Length: 222
Image 1 (spheres, rainbow, N blue to C red):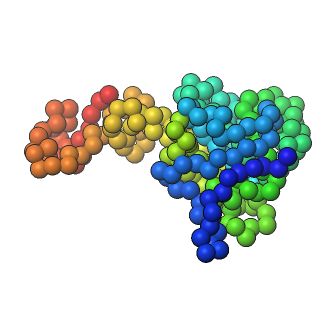
Image 2 (image 1 turned 30 degrees about the vertical axis):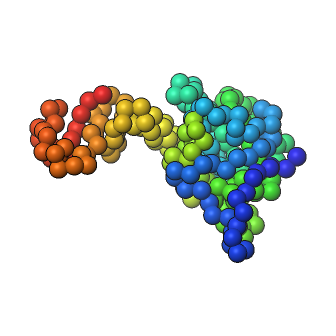
């Protein structure tokens, strides 16, 4: 079975526009190392969908080892990991087995196949005219409602930072839950930023937790 995806119809022959932050993630159904998977299977949970150029490549192997080691931390944040590449299911199974034999790491999350590159193209990981997966190393953070909340794209030569993806996920959860903002480098336990006021009256009110800040920059604690 090839990857199946419901594409939005292009207008006037133009290619399908890739989704952006704040839009709904394109639905898909495809085979994986853990059976058939659909995006809808994970509704109600966060998803980190990450693509890689090819199986049996060094940078991708390092990433799958890191994601596998951090899997319990993602699960603690009610988040599922989904790895994707254009390689076949048989290739995924062989690679996952090789990672387990060589590095003692069992990949605990589904590795999705996308041999027709339909999912990669629908998510904007590849241009419509691409004939190879050489540029694919993109991460999508999808919220429990199925909306894209963040994207990160790396070149083939540079591996992702799994700690940063965890930090990003934690920050998104905090800002949703508490209606706050997070400053540069924020980590759980650090101070947050209070959203700036939208009226003159609100701007005149002092913020009791940070008297050094101005109306637009106020630190606070959760």
